[in-house]
Image (cartoon, rainbow over all chains, first blue to last red; front, top):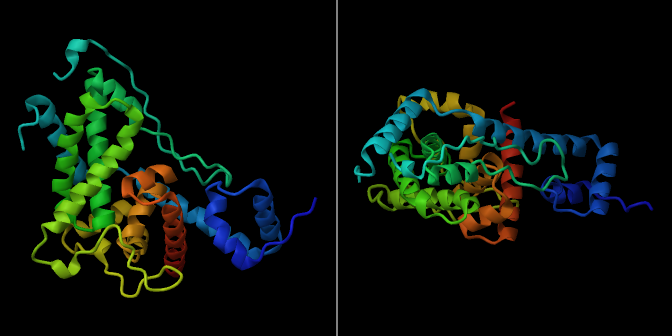
Length: 86
Length: 224
């Protein structure tokens, strides 16, 4: 069964739902078929994925050294003395 | 030593948050919850788990303060608040899987309190909940650059930590959108969990996340 085509605007409106897995299989297929023949939309999908990847990568970054050292000192003090600092 | 009388010496393997979007477009799962096993072990007296949990709580507080509220000078207080509240809360938590949303709500509230205390700069106070969107596509006219507000000696270190391009792109988002990007994209919470933390509907979270992604993509593309 062939699925009806989706427009570029239609794809852009649904792209987050697509990437988040909120769409049904038929709609996903529409989007994938469109992306196969539309380089611009294929690039938009790739960009959205890359944007999420950049955010994810940033979340994995450790705390700056100075901030981390202070945080560790606070933890040690709390575990030794208990929550008396407030 | 807290909880040591319980005698449990659990070995805790902490799941690293994954990206729900990178590998499979139809994967709707949120990132694995890295906190629940730590909460469980810490409540049973595992001091190493408690240390890891307290460090993570502070890391969350630091990221939220800097990225959503944009005040480096508030981060220390918000981190301290998250540390103490987490320490006190661990023993009483009944459902370890609920800890993650509790932590983000706690940090969000601490940031809000810090903002309300800024009586000397009322013009800069922006709601974390209102998107301040003026354009139909979600963009805002004159979005205040709170996320790059700090211009002190920490600024270079913060840019090195997060990446200047992403920090600048996030700064262009309305605060409510930044909060959703942080929770959903960076911290890996599910839509339902983000809705719980922000007290928005899931539909509202999805709409704002989509607009934020569009804006982020445009900003990042402009810097390439």
